[in-house]
Length: 409
Image (cartoon, rainbow, N blue to C red; front, side, top):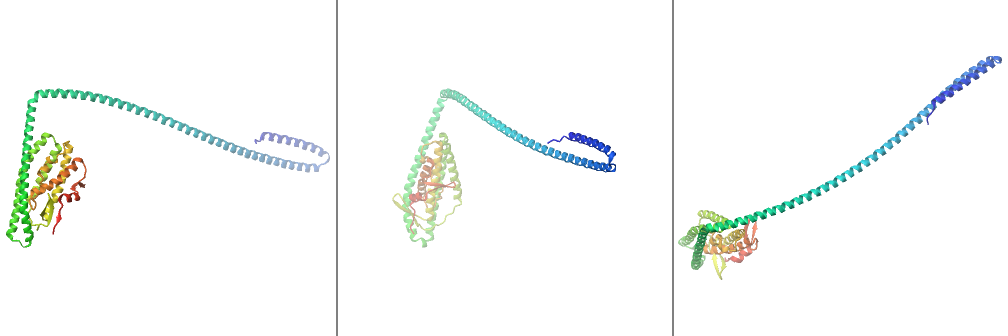
């Protein structure tokens, strides 16, 4: 509540004037009859007036303090209400601003999605147009290429027909020569097989005799046996020289047929054979003891010693690995299934050293492993062998079926 200090002051002045006037009348009356009493009364009246004035001042001060306190409380209350209103207004503004920002973000996201969809649609349309243009250009190019190729072939046929005929005749002649050489080699192999059977019969008697008296046989017999093994090794080396000449002719034929993978295999095989020949130059003959193993082939049992048994097992494993590589090469070239035409099958002597096992015997088991490896390589499977960290080898069960090796004592 607001206090009117000006009205209070006016009232106080009027009251003072009334008191002064009353005091004057009283003094006039007292002068008539009361004398000293009047002075005392005046003094009391003055004291009373002073006290009234003090009370009035205190009342005015109290009223002012109450008014100031009420004014402060009202101001504080008004300020608090104003702050609350401002806070509420600020909260409303923030909420409105957040809502506005959310709406803006939603609108921006919607516009971005719409723009993205339009861009993707434009890109798809451009890609489709580009693909269509590419197909049209490619078709036109292919048509032009076909027409150019047809024209070129006609021109070439007209110009190079005699040369083509000569080349075809030369290839046919080369093929005939190769077939003749192949037939000659097969004849030599047939003759070698006949010789091998004859020598095998002689070896059987010699092995039986050497097994009976191996522990106390004379030095002359040991020298004869060693000479026989070294003679066999020399014969194998001479055969290798003839094989190298045949391999060069085979290489030219593969080049004419454009069998790049098979040509690469042949070169790699010949390099492995060459490295193996270097190994044989430092190989020394050792006596590995009596014939204590036997194996079954073509209805008969044959005997050999520990080194010969290892050689035959090695022949099957090496044959499988070489056959697998040759089969892969023919598959890459798109060539027909023909393991007998591969250099590895024709040669079949990689790993042979000429001792304790006849070359025909080694080649037989090498080709047994080769045909199975070729089949796996050509068809991309592992039916007869396995691949362990890049090393190819025939399965033990298959090896046992092929060789049927037995320890006899």
